[in-house]
Length: 418
Image (cartoon, rainbow, N blue to C red; front, side, top):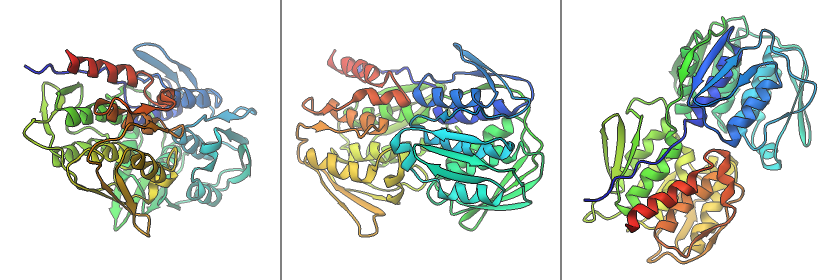
């Protein structure tokens, strides 16, 4: 009988970031369980502490005492490589008239912020770009209505609604054509767990939020297992056929990237929800097939799908790919360059919004550059299960979200060797 592998997957970084912000704005002490230990979480905790929030990480419970007065330090708040941290903390500038200075890695400082800047400007804040820093000044003027262009990042929306919920004033926010809508829905769900009064509705391609501005209450909150991390091992099972079981996950999770399971099924995997978790496998009689997938609601899964596409038996077409250029690396270019090294044929439409991958007959050994992008390392690391001549350059970059990823991948490979 094939041994079922259960990896040690951390808590959701995305859920944890939102819970830390909400707890940091609540009046009283919150207890957060299963906060992941990774670079992104370290960055957001560091910045919250720099804004007078008390955070006491420990295992398994992190205690957060909300700031009685949100007060940024005169020193720069270092967001490292975390776009989540940069955008969320920048939005919190709406809660103070003190200056706020943010900094981070060169790539982080290049990532899109325009839509958020425009919303902050409309609410009384001024943003000065003085590389390697962003300085935000001005007295907030919370309006009854505000609009944000969220086409390049749903994090603009998440940051603004979390801040406005603690502003003391009722506001209606319209998010125009927001990217990554499931992550915005995740933010609303976490906010409501901390007592925020907020309603979300769709209006055509936009989202509209009614925000009471009445603040947050402390809570005991358990962070779910990280779907984005779990998905790599669930994809590994689709690649090898050796089953993987992820405990402590439910179909109704607030994490939108669970939609990758539908992609895995369309490519030939068997997905089963049972015993409080999810199991992925693939029969030896079922080939790994190419598919067509729209990435608009799960752009962070593009690299995993690209890795699967490289060894499928037919082409894969990915839609809504333009946003990949604005991630931790230019992921659209990275897919094209690195899959070509492996022997796949990759093309992108003139609009940049459709990517076609024709798999190689056999993967070629190659050194895969990771562009200081944790998801490049993890997704393309899966292909070492098929071709041991593939090596990953700078595997340590996975510390951004899952420092133990490669040790878990080696454990999985060892199960298959026994």
